[in-house]
Structures are given as C-alpha cells and as structure tokens.
Image (cartoon, rainbow, N blue to C red; front, side):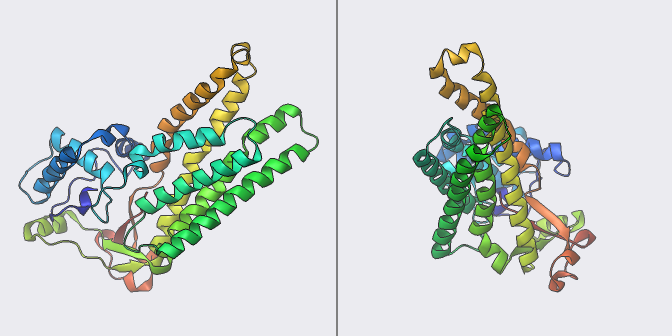
Length: 337
C-alpha cells in the first residue's frame, strides 16, 4: 500500500468517507478490482513514482491520475513490507482464485474423496492468502505455518465429512430439506475452518503483538510533512493484535456466508425447473455463474465490515500505552486483510 512508500507526507486515505460502511465498501471495491492485475511492472513503478512524489511534497495536490496510481499501489503492495503481494493471493485476485475451488466444493452429490480433495485445496489457498496479507510486524515461523496448515485442513475435513455422514441420518425432515442441508455442508466446513485458519496463521501476531502508532492531528501531520519525519511505532500490542485477527476472521465468515449459501440454494431451485432438468450439462456453468456473481458483490461488502487502518482508544490496550495516545487519546494499527 501507499503507506509503505518513502515520504513523510501522508496521502488521503481514500476518495471516500472511511468512517462510514458504504465508504469502506467503495474503497474495498477498488482494492479488489481485478483490472489492477493487468498492470505491468512498468505501470506499477510509474504508480509508485507518482505516489512517492506526492509523499515527498513534489506534487502539491491529488489528481485523477494520482488517485489511479494510489489504487494500483494499494491493491498490489503489502502495507508493511512495500513488496508486491504474489498475484494469486492479492485481494484483487480473490474472486478468481476462489472461483474454481468454491465451485468444486459446491458440486452436487460430491463423494468422500472429492470432499476431502476440495477441502484440502481450499484450506491451502486460505493459508496462502492469510499469510500473504497478514500484518508483517510479527512474521510467522515456517514450522508454525506448517503446523497451522495441518490443523486447519484437519478441522475442515472433519467438519465436512462429519456433517456429510450426519445429514442422511437426520429423521423427521423431508427429503427436500435433507438435500438443502447436504448442499450447506461445505458452508459449515468453510466458515468454521476459515475462521480457525486466520487465528492459526496469524497466531504469532497475538503472541508477540503488532506495531501501533499514535493518531496524529492535522497540525501534527503538517509538522511531520514539513520536518520530513516518519511516525515511529509506540511498540507492539497483543490486545491490538487480538482485535485485528478477530475482525479479520469475522470478515472471512461474512465473505463466505453468501458465497457458500446462496448459490447452492438457488441451484437446488433451478434444478427443479424443466429447462435445467432436461439440460444437465448446463449445471456446471450455471453454478459457476452463480458463484462468480455472488463473489463479486460479497467480497467488498465483507472487507468493509471493519476499517483496515483501525483506530482505538489507547486505554483499551495494555497499560504501557495509556499515556501514549495521539489525538483524542487514540492509537492506530494495520489490521491486515
């Protein structure tokens, strides 16, 4: 993100009001815009140059070209390291990366082997995305990464296979209800294991804490820009890390809910209609279309649930930070995505 580039002058956080949910939705839609995936290395360097020129006060005001450059930088670079996030694991590629995996998990009448393979594939993708977009002030050791991955895979497979075996044994429900419940088994597995995955993959942040910074007033920001001084970390907070990881886990559940619930329920209804019942080959493309449409709208709505740059009262954190808050006694930190 633009915060990782050199310069003491901060760019406006967004064209939109990030204190409102719909403002964050619009901002999240920009970060997750798949068109930024087609920006070349030269285009990225040009965008970084434009952003840096503003941060170093060489450019006086925001322009449409500079806003576009910020969009490219924000959707490509990690906010802590300043390095490009590997393309398949960027939020702008999230819908595309998850499309085939989600379609596989939601395949009607999936057998045990298929259930296992798709759950393993999904958790592998989740691990990569969570690791690539995590707060990097407390990196995860490789051994812990592998251990967390194995636990997440075991959890998702256990839930999926357990519910798959349980649903047919449920009595006093109609066959139609059993079909719906069977189609919702992947959702239960993905939601529970997905949230667990976030906590496991970012557990090091909770154990060691993440960097927090004072919230600056407009006067302090102006002085910082004039003096060319970078804002220094106040230290690492475990409570801030717990909040950041918890909100990210919840946003993952919010994202998976419509994607894993609406398409299978709509498909059940469509399969009862004559046009699809007589054309079974259309089931797969219809399923893909439903998942793609739902994913495009669900992702920014879920990402916007919580601000990425989170500000909280210093007194809500460890006592060592109580007297270090900035404007309004607040501190801020990067939540991660």
